[in-house]
Length: 268
Figure 1 (cartoon, rainbow, N blue to C red):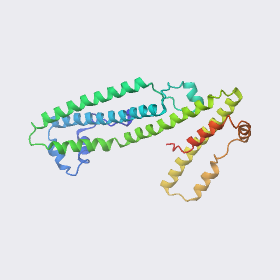
Figure 2 (cartoon, one colour; figure 1 turned 45 degrees about the horizontal axis):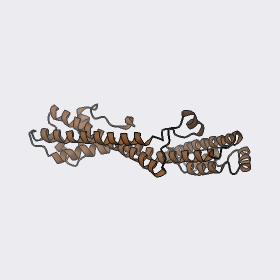
Figure 3 (cartoon, one colour; figure 1 turned 135 degrees about the vertical axis):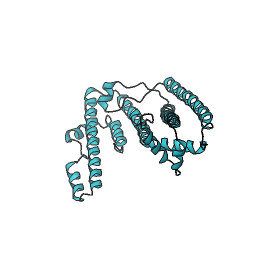
């Protein structure tokens, strides 16, 4: 996630001032406020602190989702091994013990409060000494709007992670239900082949959507849509798998639920 987080300490003074100016209507006031190197560096540091606070709050929200999901299900499952996750094509990051989630939440909240307190005190003490006078409300608005705008991609990534968290949790529940009846080796092999086929189908669907968006953006003729459908027919499973699945209806019941759950995922 950190690769999507802006870094205000690394951009030039000119770009930094332009970013603040683009965040407010009275852009000329930014130049009046930041009329010295000392002021620019101070506001740059404050903006970076604000940036970190927003980032930490996104982390807090994600950990809260972990906690609420665990409370709702009433289970705090351990993380899956790499081999299990790879065999079933699921994410292994889901599954934190309750005490780790609670401790992480407490650390985030305390860190946020400490940094926020220092931020407010320093801003109030320094700004009132500046000449000409600087409107503290205006400057705070510019900083907050600048940070929020620059973190749009970051928020999208966190939102995607929260959605995947729910789906990953469902995957684990379906897999557990499949193994609860203790299927034999042959039934497990059939299930793995169905999972693999579904995985390949979803990857093909992803490529189809990417190609379709490219075609749309380039405004190519609609005949290309038909070409996509003809070249990417992913609606059928191999005949042998279907026949074997029909012979084992109870074994694959939970697999069918998993396929239905996965089929509506929008793969990015």
